[in-house]
Image (cartoon, rainbow, N blue to C red):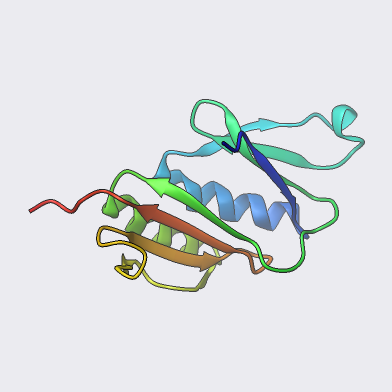
Length: 129
């Protein structure tokens, strides 16, 4: 099981503005900014619900393919994630909708963050009848 992850971003201000907005509908928020004296002066922050598990740092921007999926309890939250991410400057990479090729109840939305990384919100719950 993964406990947490960190990746580098090219513009910390742009990325934190994006993630602050995009993750809020999923119940995630910025919980901890690492003091510069503990990070060698590198801007670094962690997002989560009760503890930070998703970290970004403005150092050695991650290059190449990166896909991160955040689990959502509802399809409505997936829709809200997508709308917030697009409004915060994300680029469409797959509008909210069913993805039955993954499994019958898979409902996801995909956006590209400011560095072009594929960020997803997904709900696996059976839709209400």
